[in-house]
Length: 227
Image (tube, rainbow, N blue to C red; front, side, top):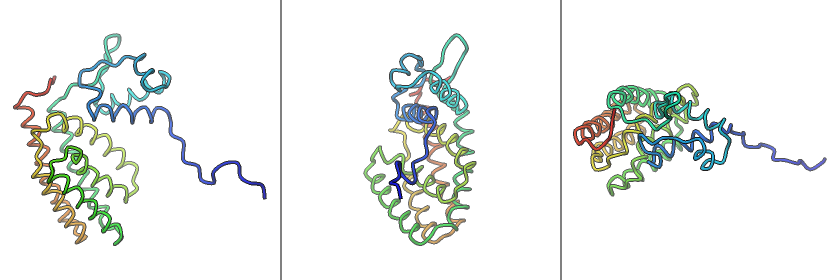
């Protein structure tokens, strides 16, 4: 038999627009691209190493996500924070998290419960140390659970809403509600251990409260330039 010329199971190719979108989204979330910063086509082409077409397609998706603003013949820029839109996003975010837990927990194997518990234990250690990198852990919890469901519509909805929430959650770290997010992690770990869906949905209460308190503190502090 002739030797195959390529891998038996090649990795699926990703569209350039999706690669560009992920890079730009990460740059918005980590602060590389700041709120109000104007986007220049030539600079983006140089940075991303692709043509204008996938960049414009990615920007159009970021506009849909509410993270980029465009006005014809005037500007394309990173959006300015909007507290009212953030409140709306938090409502949907809370509902999607609860739905994810309700659907995912009955599907988990014993090995996956152990894996999940170990991950949350590590996340709690980072929270106790006030490790800034640990801020992503609370969302990684639902990402793990959502991955066990395998519903692309849920994945897309969660990505859109989470992008808006993370856009407003990171800027002013001194206002972050570490105790509440640690309580959330503790409660969701216990709920998954017991395979108790009702306990799991209730576990999101302190996470939702943490996000709301963060929003209120940032709004009062006036640390962000907003609309």
